[in-house]
Length: 121
Image (cartoon, rainbow, N blue to C red; front, side):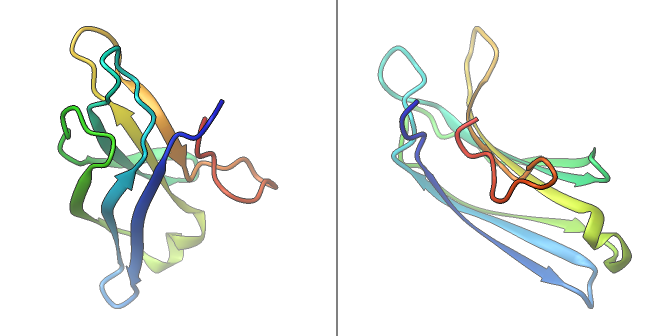
């Protein structure tokens, strides 16, 4: 299957504000998904509560780029009592003009009992 690249991000939960900030910083060595040997990547960030999608945010699309710098931050409100059942799912996508957008990689929606993420699926 080969490498799908790397994503640099940070998460910061602020209990006094009941919010989490997801910083999508940059990606590198992303897999080329387009015929021309590049990709048009963007990142989707889903807030999940009890396995249900609650809120979605996404970065801008970086055209023809395998090493995009996003530097975008997204804040989500999460009450402390819901924190244990809340998941953040991050998907790096390739924007396509004529067909469905392709998934380059995904992390965060791990089946119960499996450590780590699903980057590369």
